[in-house]
Image (cartoon, rainbow, N blue to C red):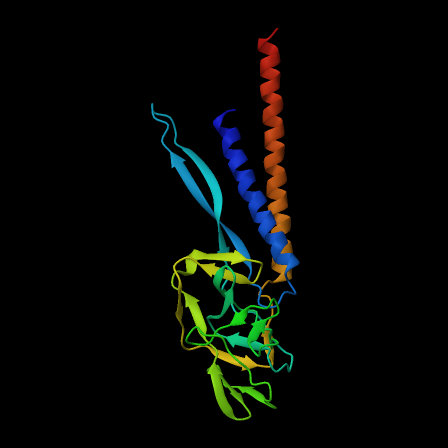
Length: 238
């Protein structure tokens, strides 16, 4: 295959990855705390030598998470929390500590504040949060201080990744940070609210159509290139 074919193949591979990312975004429009995912394209240039032009190929091996704030929806739930600003909740999972923006929590049988998947929500010191079983009223201040019947019991921690580009998505709304996490200040937590997905369906559908058309154009080129090579081989074989 000539260099033009290899270049087109790398482009097709990248477009397929982007199409998968867009499809995943659209599938999670209604997922609480979901953050839009995109693909970052990089260009690899190789000098061919002997006075020939350089060869350029595109790769799309890095996925990017959109950090923009999603819309907030009021639920009135006692343990529904939404972050206004930057930062993540920190939860403890069997695979280690993870970050999330999905603030739909509930006390478990032991009184621990957990996610809907049963993972412990951690406070600003990295410890589990316990809800008194006899508490009649639970309130939350903007700084994350949680009170039971007017008495402070814990402060929900807000964290950020040390390296924002090192986030690895897990299960849609959970993220692992390769470089670790650190506390963040300046953000606030709202009780009785949840953060919706930050995916804009209109722009995502438009992007899907654009990517599909680009992929079809690339496939048409490959088909015509294949026909041309077959024709040359048939002519030489006579």
